[in-house]
Length: 210
Image (cartoon, rainbow, N blue to C red; front, side):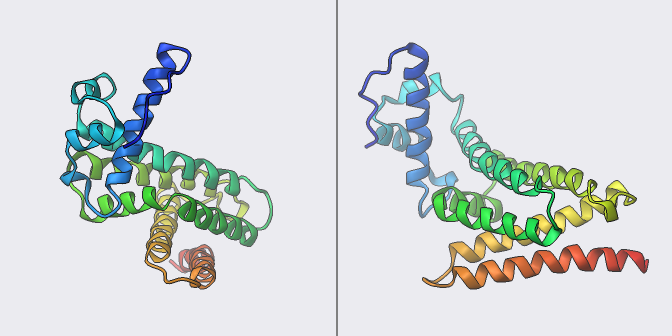
């Protein structure tokens, strides 16, 4: 059970602490199961609160699930954005982005298992939230790609196509890391860098011939 007994100083802090306990409780219960199998009573019991108190923080279980999705993606998007903001060569940006992704997956494996499971096997509001966050991630990346000199003349459609390919490759890397055997991370990171280099070199070459 996640304890929420220590009293923070203000009502707002108490509310935020309980909300955090509910999110953590749900994530802990999702280690080896889908969100759809989770019940409100399970979550509140693990969080150490009565079931009726749940509705002071979330209108429904779906709302809690969507909050988990947004939280899981927000930190990753922010850190990848910081890596992309680097003005060095594209190969260095790729390396920094892959390293950031690797570090985030290893630091927050429960979050990423949840995202992958709901992306490919979930349904309803939570699955739609994952898809929405991935589209947002892709759209932000397309904007960043337009800042590169050799991509500035590309249409929005082509930039979004390239961004979607990159995001798909990153999803594959996340899955590889989650399923990796001990000692395989270095190989997975190298493969991830190669995938992104093939996309960033291959797509412009293809486009120049069309």
